[in-house]
Length: 64
Image (cartoon, rainbow, N blue to C red):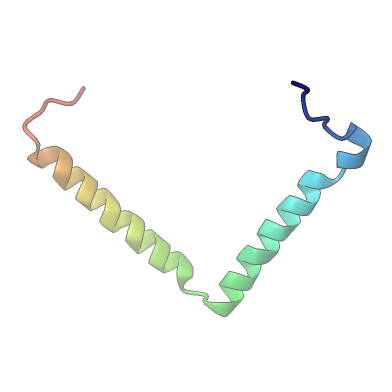
C-alpha cells in the first residue's frame, strides 16, 4: 500500500492566507447583512451557560 503524495511546499504557499481571507470576508458579509448577530450569539451563549449551570446544580452526582 502506497501513501498518497502530498504536494511540495512551494505549491501550498499562500494557502492559509486565502483561507483566512475567505473566513474574514464571510464574517464581514454577515455583520453587514445582520449587524445584531453578535448580540444574538451572546444571548444564546448566556442561555446555554444558564442551562448548563442548572443541569450541574440539579444533579446529585458530585463533580470534581
